[in-house]
Image (cartoon, rainbow, N blue to C red; front, top):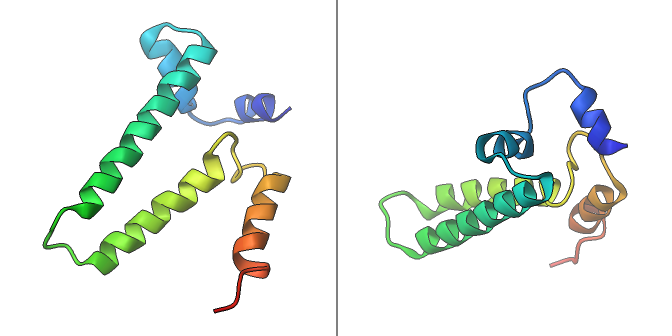
Length: 101
């Protein structure tokens, strides 16, 4: 399965693995904790995008769009390492069957 594939690869521990070790909690609680941190980070990003800044909005928009891509690819599954049907569907909707202007 996908989780075993990820664990069998020779790479560093996942965020969930690190969270489990750091807080000595179950995998389910680790997922809850990581998801809460992601939700909090999105709130921070959205609040900061509304504040005036000397940084050009065009640069901030590029950064925001990169964060959005990461969110889409990794929400609920690793859609980057092992491309799922969901990842294919999202790409198809955004780039192949997109609504014309």
